[in-house]
Length: 559
Image (cartoon, rainbow, N blue to C red; front, side):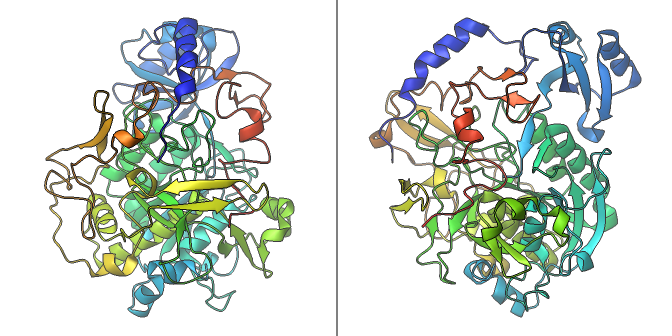
């Protein structure tokens, strides 16, 4: 556990406050403050969007680009100089940028107990799983179970996978294993695939596309029995989950009866501000409704006993809301799964041909690979008991997760030789390591009137202790302890031995990425977001060879 935490960030925060002043409560802090350049923003309204609200935005020079379904929001293009005036509209609740985001099994299946589930007849049959990603290729093992597909961006030609990430994710969930003679079969090979493409051939997309896809999944829920959504993607946290439009879309899906599984992010190695990877969960993994998944290493064995956390797996608590994340961990390192079938669609393969496994499979690393393992597990539980609510599925997976870990472990990057130490605490492994067999065999009743929201933690500046904030309306309340059969307790979970030297970032209301985010053409991704040099996401980190966040994270893996 670290004995220092973000001490060097205090001066930056003070500078940010002086430079930008008190932010407008309706304007996200990463919006530009001035300028005539048009930017895409998501405007959330207090009521369902009607023509009169759209007309008022147009009256201030805005252009309506997309409706965002039930989210009481729309995608607009507005000049930065008009945002402050626009926020004065009493019908507008919040304005945020249409932020860019990225796509964040021979040993995987037996490690989590999926083979035993399959042998017992549980394969996810009849359960619809929506994969919101870079598309899914038309290859044997995937196309047989695909019941629906759609390109969310109308400018794209089709919903095929021109990047490789989405096919890999879908394969982990439901590949039939026909191509590999069953070696790389998915966790729930009988599940139905709903392919909703939101990422381009570089594995990049925007909030509005993902929100639109989530809304589409909700609309198609009853038609295709969509019970699970997989989101192996993410971007930095800029505001509370209560106003983040991406998190609000996750909440709507959850309330509609759909389990939402999200990758935790791959920032666990980031120590730019001496935070040792804590507080780096990405959005929408910071949603308390979602099942947020961290990555474990199977170390090429079917046994759990020698498995260790992947050092790049993002750690909680979440920024701003201080929510305990991840919720659970699953295999995510060196995961072998499907690759796109068509040669012209293989962007990842062109860049990293050494990751090919045979002629038809591909190896990737990251929490993006761990999330679909849990999505497949959720499909198995819902096949066995279709009456389970998303909260009950989440509680069952977390309650039965294996909680036996070492105190700490080290990992060495094979390329740089750098060594990283990981401590096994609630902010690193959550409720524990996925155990599908135990979850399927769990018969303990789960009250339907209680939610499974991920708990919040509180930091006491006087004692330097971190404790759980209990809530009687949540499944895990005041009577449980962290142990072998339960999830979380109310006793101190982070003591004075790890007290932070500067708690203004992790425990305050500031965002780790600060307010130095600017808009312009200097970004390597073009006219999108460029992370300031005072941010841990300076170009040399985010876009360089040492990428720790994005689609093909840590492609070499770790030893």
